[in-house]
Length: 493
Image 1 (spheres, one colour):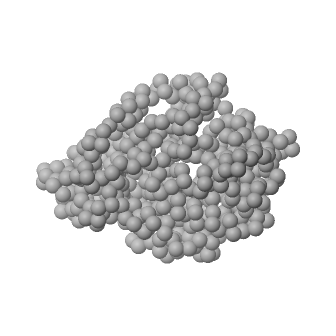
Image 2 (cartoon, helix red, strand yellow):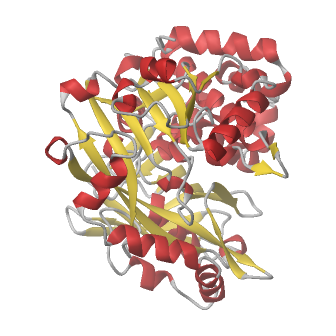
Image 3 (cartoon, helix red, strand yellow):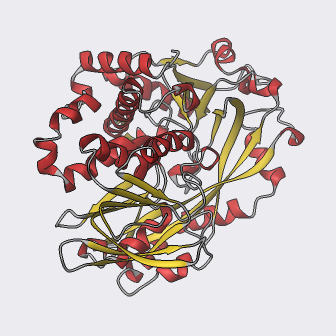
């Protein structure tokens, strides 16, 4: 089967974002003709793959970088914003389960306590203040705090083994945290879409160029990598959810909104163990403070992972550097991305982020023994033979034009849409997949605003009962939707 010449919607990339948007659009209008192009032989093989991300359902329960201290006070605004985004994702997944669109939620989401763990008097004081600040928000009620070694040993026995009684330690614990296999979830969504008559999914098909067709739509140059065939496909609306390749594809469209963007690729590695004796002593995702100069995606954490029903522990990630924009990309990706429109942004971001450059050099040159030394900050008696080094996914951090610095490195996730609203792209990394439903609703708001407020409005409220409300201001709604998602997703907290 080959792609048709024309579709209503074309989505580039077979990851969680495209799968989510396609599923939403199909629910809103089953007659929309939708096509998904994936350059690899399977969907969800890049950033959405379980081994290429931390699997954290990012709710700001444990991530300390979302709660900065400013003039002695803890700012929780970003934490609330992140927590609300993940609640949107859980509502959407619950809707899909309820409708029978996907099943067996334990195959992609499981309860897993989220913890912050800190060392030293200064960080203990910070964590205590953070806990007090978060308790004022209904989104974080139920979070426990302790600096008592006996209690900490109950929470994380693997991490507390061989600690000295004099060690200054503290932790917070939120039992409604989750571990998510975004690769499995993506596959479930794509399997459903493949069974419909109006959605087509083509693997081994790479979009190489996007041009305006002069009729209010877009013309895509598509290469069939398996059969070495090229063709042109037209679409009224295009979404670029191609991970690291989203930026060059967005630039190829020539839209004004793409100018000045650059990309800075960062790779990662994990230390992984499946030793049952170790795994059974750690049932949480435990985050601590980031190293000075480290990007947010490199905050050290020791995580329980549940992938294909099997448990493992991951520690890291250790940052690396590659000029590839995707794990299965080309070493020419970064140099080929440089052009006159973004070179000032790229240089400015590099010049003003020298600590990050030094940090990456230090990380890239580390031996396994040195990485084990960092792990022993978490697990005192970690043995090298129990842990293996695995490569994680490739991320491209956004570099945006800045009038003062030339370019500014961004670590969030950003939706870029042209003024006509007929092409959209997702750029950036953290918190990434956790925000998939929220991010795709942002795309819909910018590109299908009239439909959302009329024909699609009731269906949207069925998918996302909290839509249009700031959850932090509606405690009763928080309890209602969390009970709903707990039941539908079979969570155990």
